[in-house]
Length: 337
Image 1 (cartoon, rainbow, N blue to C red):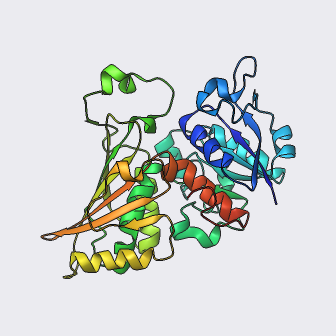
Image 2 (image 1 turned 45 degrees about the horizontal axis):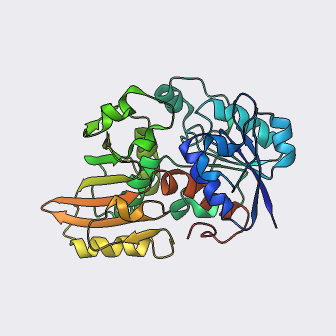
């Protein structure tokens, strides 16, 4: 079985990583790439890394044509714009993995408050599987649409969910402190990500108001079975890629770090892309991979979980391919190891 795939919004960093992964996938044919580019240049003109590997032209978005040619479409469009297109593709029977935040949250009012826009497809909210296979894998194979998780949420949820479920950390006063490479801000030029601004500098941003906050809170609360209260602070680090998240929680009971580590190991025993380490992980070791590396420590009454992922792979495109593999009955690891 060969799955015909298309990519909407094919010029960004996550789209490039997605295309590179799909080119390694022996059960996939890339048949369409969309972007508003004058003259419909080949994708290799925008992403020179693809020269000699893929020369498809960038097309203007025509949803009727896209649906007729594709079994699965990856939407790398911005929030709100994505849902408009996704709803039409689903109506034509095309399956979708959506990179935007449009279907991650389960409450329309929360989405509209944090994203400051009316949701274009509100009736679907709450019924779309959250595309984190380590926790929601059973819902993904039959799904017509999967909401690909955010990068920061992936790093935080994988770190904290097993310990919250086991009841060995408190669900209030949780602190999620994350550092991300500059590619997390996207490819569109912005003052803060210009080389003279971010090189040799390290800064927090969107403090107290980052849009991934309700996503982290929602998913952890769902998995814990009760409300989780947390503070999330992201930082920009002058490196190309990677996320290091340090999560702090209050210990419940007297479990040792070794016992905490065993809880993580048990939780991810069958998860091919989660590695439990003895030593704190480094972003360099998960870069360009679909792995999440975790380590845990107990310091006094605090439990500290350190999580590393590649923001463009496990935090975006690798997870999307992992989800597609499950949707179409392929081995979960295909094209990812």
